[in-house]
Length: 134
Image 1 (cartoon, rainbow, N blue to C red):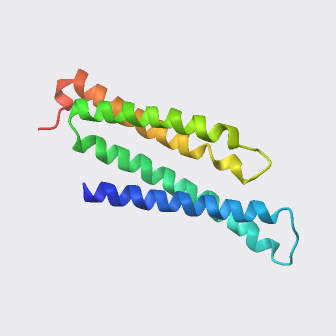
Image 2 (tube, rainbow, N blue to C red):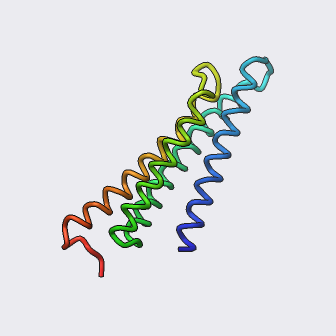
């Protein structure tokens, strides 16, 4: 359980750093300096950090689904999907395609896919008895 918590905290840190890098680059687009190439690198780095966080969250959901019972995985998946819809309701009004906030839907997308994975694995383990871990 400590590995799962550590992986989730690392994913959260990567996501925060990615958003911060995109915010810094987005704020810079309205100014000009001789260091523009650094801000372009920062934008690429921010997107890469968001991708790493996405992969880490999905991988953690896959690992977590194996640790839980079948019904536990299914219910955890449903809870994460509900959190995804809640985060979408919060994030959706803030998104602007002409600013760094275009990347904010990464949060609900990651939640939704992680929850879908958890609930799918839980449902499959409930339906097919051979998939149960003993």
